[in-house]
Image 1 (spheres, rainbow, N blue to C red):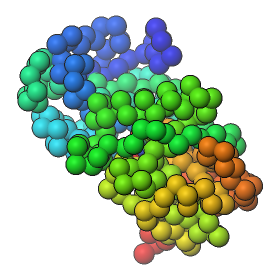
Image 2 (image 1 turned 90 degrees about the vertical axis):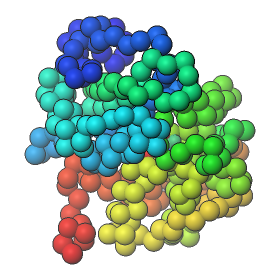
Image 3 (image 1 turned 90 degrees about the horizontal axis):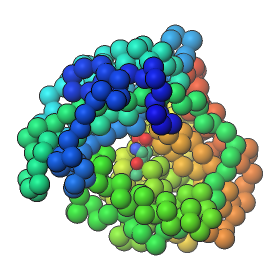
Image 4 (image 1 turned 135 degrees about the vertical axis):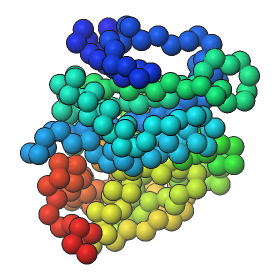
Length: 299
Ligand code: PMP
């Protein structure tokens, strides 16, 4: 028993719906030894039209992309994955929940991708976080990986060592979260979320290249476009971020969360008056299918 399961919990594992204890995984798996696995983090929300997985297709496309670039065989279609996930949510009677699909690789002590894979999907209750808890963030001494060293846009298990090291460093120093720069000294992202900053009524977010192309980040970009909120994707340095009026992180787990401070810089704009706050509210409506101003649906 852990924070993610109880006696009633059912998981999907290798083609079957099982109790977590009935599922086995090998001690010889390449995922365990070398971090060659691919995963996703997805959320489902209780809406007036029932339980809705938010951007299920985009998440499963990214899972399939990760398997492809890592050379891991994975033949499920996005439609199959979505159907299995809804079935799993029903079996667990979950509505507001977090979903964690994971592809692990077969037994191999070699460094060539094993040609066997297993899909496991777990889910557990996770209420919406949306709150006004602002984060105290520390600039990490760790950088995001060189994008030529791996596929930074793939959610590969091994990549998360970088996120763990930076989170440990920030938390051990008394902060809530870590901010990482890329190898060129540009602001990149948080250990598990993307960043936006606000300056003079305009938003900026780092360009793709060294960051995870977050699905929440794209949702926020879409909402900005549709709501007429000015936003630009560009590279910027820490010095610029430390002159911003406000800043926030975006991610499936974090949703939209404001920053109180970065190192010893306090963001001066009141969170409730920032564009981040407005977007936090709009995002909340978006995930529940309640946002009105949807130009893309009309055009
Ligand atoms: N950056 C990193 C490093 C992440 O792990 C995540 C979570 N997948 C994100 C950003 C945010 O991505 P998403 O909005 O797709 O959850």
